[in-house]
Length: 139
Image (cartoon, rainbow, N blue to C red; front, side, top):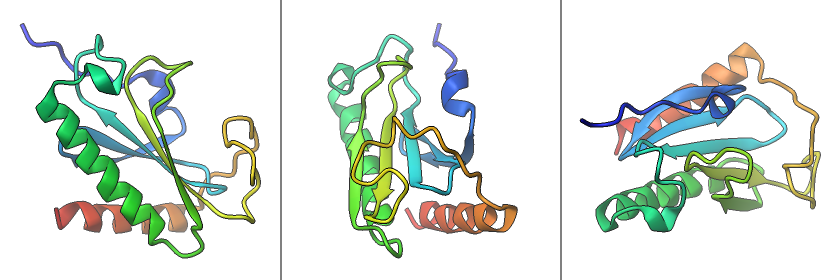
């Protein structure tokens, strides 16, 4: 029997689901301090590391990482795109893609230690969602 994919509640909290690309669910963190995406491969809960993926799924995930890293890097003001699959607090395999700039609230430190959150305005969130959905539609 195939396992049903369940998104970890901590990943869902504070995020908006944008859609799917390949085998990944695409989430946008609702914190306008950073352009922050989460890619969550819809795989077995036993798969907690990228190197645990079979070759085909790994290739699909890497393709998605490359596409979204490129998209984030083209956004106005982004100077650096950080990609990480850490999972110390949430074991479910997920990849962070974060656009950084020298004026962001945590620069040059890591974003993980920044506790200040500023949700997007409804208009800005809708604008980003639409841009991401358009991007997904062209793939």
